Image 1 (cartoon, rainbow, N blue to C red):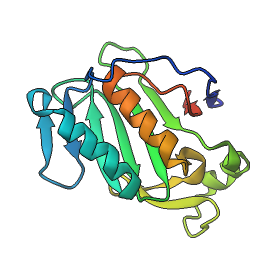
Image 2: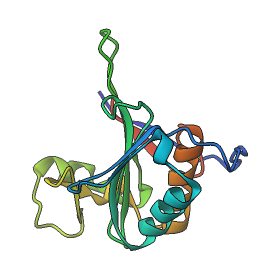
Image 3: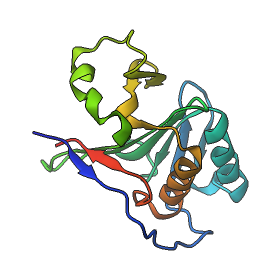
Image 4: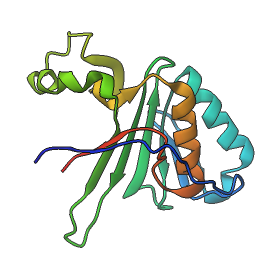
Length: 167
């Protein structure tokens, strides 16, 4: 099936700046993790600052860190946001990614998997192994940080950026 583009909206709903929907935070390839009781304003601020410099972290809505999360992957130039929701009851799993319309013409090239083509691929590695295509990464770090905070606070996708849902 063809991926579904979720276009950004002009209006972003307000949210409680003190709310925390995330229940577990896990830094990839590190022993650093935070449980619900350890997620403080200081930890949230640290994560948001790291998006600008480089970060590889998963923000889980479930306290066990297994089935409902956003992967946040940044090198300071590119930011990839992957929203994953896995179901056990036969319902179809959901995969939604940040979307960069400036690279919409590279979809066919991503299927060829020529990872040496720097016009198509970022240097970001999802899960430490899969290169992220530029079509799934954004370079507007300010909007990206807003998207990360919105997810931390609400558990929802930030409507101020474009997204793509794999069907």
